[in-house]
Image (cartoon, rainbow, N blue to C red; front, side, top):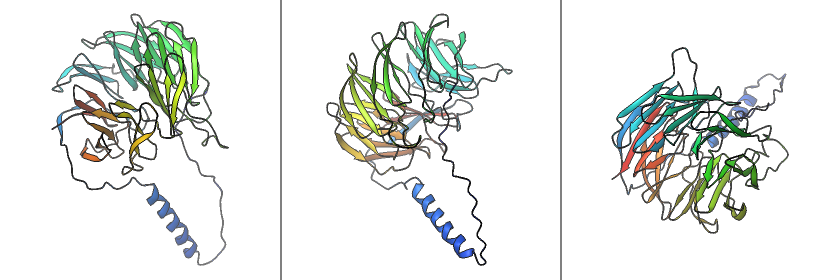
Amino acid sequence: MTHKHLIRAVAGAGLLVVALSGCSTMKGWFAGKDSAAKKAAEPAELVDFEATVKPRRVWSANLGEGEGKIGARQRPAVADGHVFAAATDGGVVALDLQTGKEVWRFKAGRKEELRLSGGPGVGEGLVVVGSLGGDVIALDAGNGSERWRARVSSEVITAPLVAQGHVFVRGNDGRITALDAASGERRWFSEQELPSLTVRGNAPLAWGPGVLFSGNDEGTLTALGMQDGRVLWKQAVGLAEGRSELDRMADVDSGPLIDGVMLFASSFRNRTIAIDGPSGRPMWQSDHGGIGGMAVSPYGVLVSSPAGTVYLLDRNSGAALWSQPVLARRSLTGAAVQGDYAVVGDIEGYLHWMRLSDGEMAARERSGRKPIKGQPLVADDILLVQTIDGELNAFRLD
């Protein structure tokens, strides 16, 4: 079975033997080139600007051991005034959205090696998480007690989706498994062939009436029947082109975004597409996109590119209404919308607010010292952000 893995640029192991005396000049020449290349790849320095809004941290919580470098991009979920978040060391926490006060905490048994990496997904009275070992654990949303457990075919590094009496789980091998929400029994599964090289991560699943939408690693978006998993339509998002496997990477690892009957999807190949949800017919495409997640605002669709530029795309045409490039190479998350501002996190733990009207920088605040990989979430005007060391912070705008 093919498994997804981290992208690794492995240099060829050729050995050059130079039988010359006084080789310090050559050594210095290569060192200079290496230094210049390293400098060019570093995150862009943060620029000064006059803040026009003031973020205020309203509470913080320690969830437990964070995801570190496993590539899960975990983020919290919100339902019924509570925030639900998972820690890699096997803990799930429920917190009051307004105060951050702990409501309950689930912790795996001491003898269990439960490494939580996908979740949580929330719905129908359940909080559901997945693990690196393929475990799926459903908890009672009210008190955190365990309802049931199931097993899928590979590690789970995206949040399960709970909807219409089912729990839908996307495994890292491309298989989607539908479980009964009441019992955890398997109802159906759908397999997807993976390319030999992919971005580590999975697009969160999305759903509409009777339809499940899945972004795939070969650059497509698929619509499946929720009751039986049959394929309703498939649409290309990012075209796999090029000579090498690296060139052909086209993963759709940004979760499909639904706005009315419109469906938006974005790929690793800097391409975003708008699709008519019921038919799968493409409406427009844009050469701006990424893998960190999208957001819809009254002004348009927000995407973050792999290069570190944030774009606002016109909802009806896909044209770029503005772009903000000052955060180049800072490994940005997908954007969230908080009031009149777009917010992204970066590799150094900073949050950046931009005006939705024109993209101008409006505020900056450090959430922590570790990278932010998961897309921030806004609920009841509160911005929630989880860092890879297991810290959860909540911000309001003054």
